[in-house]
Image (cartoon, rainbow, N blue to C red; front, side):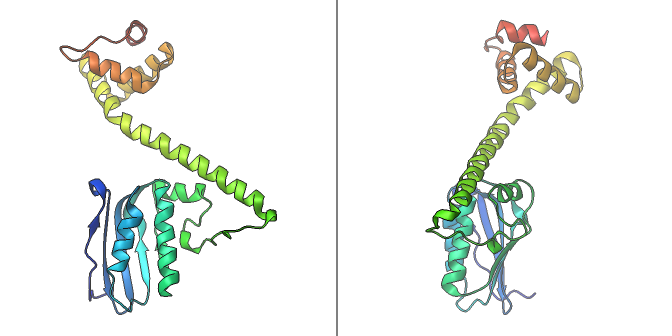
Length: 218
């Protein structure tokens, strides 16, 4: 496909999302890369508004998106609204990893969520069970996203603690991981807390880990 026009890449806050693409006589291919988080819908709206007039179709390759929270659902709403307003077909395919899991939890088509029928905004009483199920799915979705965020945030500290154990005990990375897990279980302390205490205590002015943690690590 020969590119006739390319929409300018737009980046979100902290460069969490960049949307590139190309446009020719057959339509526009957009390639979002990064995260679908707060602000992603606005970035998409700006990108769509910048497309040439008369664009006959829009396809999004979502394989470059590696993280998505509930803001990603608004991203899809923007696509649906644009397709309806401009009367052009829009697809969003090639979802992978965690974003695909979010689509599953939200009850959307993981091949192309834009193909999933949009619920009636004023549902009849007979659909209340569906609405309740949808609310429960979103609750699970938010909980899973939060757990993932916490895991991502704690990973650097845990990796540092593993490095300290490897240097101190001459063990492998896997052995250091098992030491941390056992210490967490023996002291009834979260793994992240164990790692943070060990990392802080390794500094020249850091406080030593609590007695229960020291005993578990011994």
